[in-house]
Image (cartoon, one colour):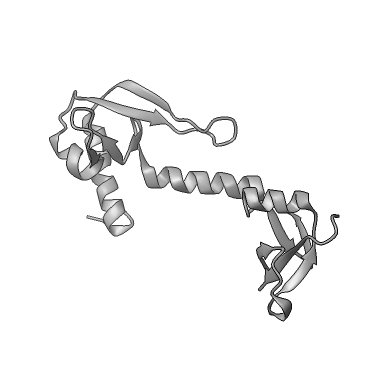
Length: 156
């Protein structure tokens, strides 16, 4: 432990380090290494049982966040994952796939889909340009619009 370094803890959460708040927060001695980890990603270091420790759930939490971000940017179909926001190469505009692009699609049109990475070994999706729109794909897009709007597929 390096003399003089400490984390400030309030409501069992690390809020910052090496700033003197006097009695407003609790201060816990720590090392420069722990501060560096916390600065890199504040989820790496946590306060638990009156100690500053490495977060034992860090990797799992990071994967869950990547998964959440992935589901915000993509939706799943029988042809693969589809990017919600698509850049139109001809104009450089970004368009919403479900609301701007889907209405103009016909069965047999080419479509770009992706394989979801595992977020452990791979973070980049594999792109597929050899897929074509099917009737099932159009149904799935319509269902995704309903899920986005209602939170689920409405019962008929």
